[in-house]
Amino acid sequence: MSFVYKDVCGFEWEMSEKGVGLVFIISAPSGTGKTTVVKGLMNQVAGLRFSVSYTTRLPRPCERDGEDYHFVSHAAFQRMVEKKTFLEWAEVLGNCYGTPRADLEKLEAEGIDLILDIDTQGAKNALNQIDQAVLIYLLPPSLKVLRERLMNRGVDSLEMIKFRLSNARNDIEEAHGYHYVIINDKIEDAVDKLKSIVIAERCRRVKDLILKENKKHWEEKDG
Ligand code: ADP
Ligand code: 5GP
Image (tube, rainbow, N blue to C red):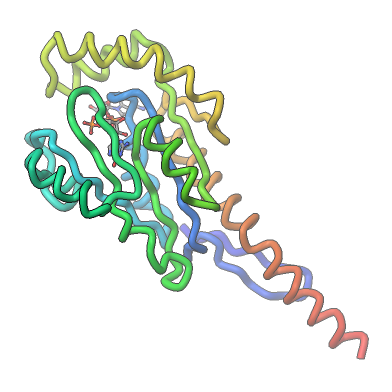
């Protein structure tokens, strides 16, 4: 669905059709529903690209190489670190994850906004290097629900689930430093809120352009 903003002079701006070079960083405790919510968002808003990270983690049964992650060996990951391929990289829950620097190139020129699904350490490192990053933290409704989601996902051992839950307690504290917090209770509501944030941030980013165009038009009218 597109959102058309019609200004006082009758100009139409399709805010969700085109990105404006923004970078949205989404973090959450593992199992909260980041992947699910981001997929829902991308089905509804055009002009978004998902940054596919590199990881040394093994693929889950439903994951595809190049789509969910680029799955690489530890040696290959280390070579990429040495070549400075990554904007940021971190060790998360025993595996390495990195965001390719190349994904951030030409965003504005191509009319794209980028989505980074990265952990809270990665978000801090990326923020130091990106001017226009919007930080969004997705919260599970409770730790009990998070445990249920991790169990239902059915990809982790009980030991791994306990490890993820103990990390979640500390991770949630980092949400204070984010611009937005969304509770992922009902999936449709979480996607709607995320969509609203993307559209609002696009409006904010092009504010100066809208004002400039409006001013020109007003001056023309005044003769
Ligand atoms: P993450 O990417 O944050 O690790 P996933 O997107 O893989 O999490 O979601 C974890 C599990 O929770 C999946 O089985 C997914 O279908 C389920 N899930 C995600 N969001 C919701 C929701 N709002 N309500 C119920 N189940 C959800
Ligand atoms: P999972 O293995 O469950 O897909 O992801 C584990 C954690 O790694 C999640 O918190 C996810 O956001 C994070 N992650 C995924 N890709 C990257 C990345 O490129 N950099 C960083 N720092 N974290 C990442």
